[in-house]
Picture (tube, helix red, strand yellow):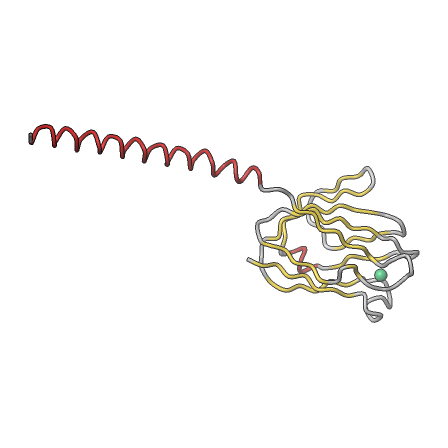
Length: 153
Ligand SMILES: [Cu+2]
């Protein structure tokens, strides 16, 4: 009787061990898949509008550290504008900027968009904080072409 009980216990432990191994193996398979699936998030920002208003649309941007973003910038206005946020750029890792047929790699601090142009800035925010955004064309910051960028942990 005791031998049967012992045998049963051994079998039970074997089953538990196998189940445990399956769970461990499964998590090793699932975690890299989840990482690979983490999509690039797109955020669209217009510099000014067709009415010539000196504003960013939207003027408040939120990011998360470690998440990759594609910042889609466009200028639908009749004048050129800047997307200037040096501290935000310093707090982020830039993979590339694409504008027209040109792809620029390396650190970026400021982008100038001529009327009707677009640019794509692919970046990963690294350091949380609040950062200011402005357009550095003379008079535009004073007219209210400013914004805020928040990077959350
Ligand atoms: Cu401007």
